[in-house]
Length: 268
Image (cartoon, rainbow, N blue to C red):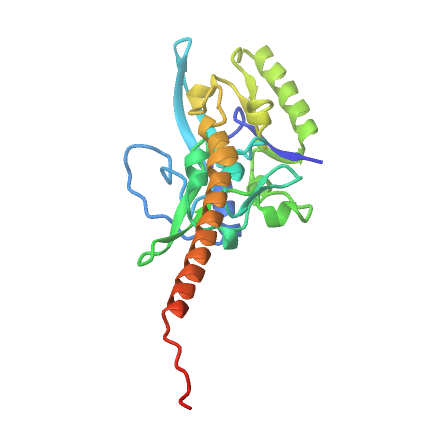
């Protein structure tokens, strides 16, 4: 059964404990940062930061409040990154997350271009050759496939994070939204129920998605269908035709060379 991560932004305290837990579990290197006038640290996802807390100021009804958002791979059901990956390094797991096998990644970067949320990042492995590998959150795929919760969920001190069957996550999120509306958060909503076929991260928001930096209606990239159904298959056909052409050329050249060899008859 598909599972999902529950993220209640209304009780997130922005402590960044999830960031620390993620780095510890994956043994990720520290990131050197510079103060630029924000509490966000780091300023973006990268090869050493699979998740981060966004800080957003939101003004409504004359009041300003912080909106915290745990950011990382949203584990789309209709995952464009999976569809464009030429090596099957990215796969949709039956549990509900998009797995990543870095050993299979060829560093093409198609996933980072196709993702409507701009999530996958490329890590340069070899500066000389330009070899790179994709990086992103996988819900701690080694943990969740062994009946454990992701490291970030386990460490959250305010219980803003949860991880269980997706239908239960949705039920909890909807109940929470109704409670928030009764408390005066009229803009409260669930984000992730239907977007891109349903997301593996289900958010409880207290403001419009755009206030958190989320697209209101994320769309599956149109060019991805073109790539998957036309360009990529044509590339395989073209490669096959090229190989066949080279083989025929070799045989023709070899035959011509043999035909030009003078036959030497033994003297009588």
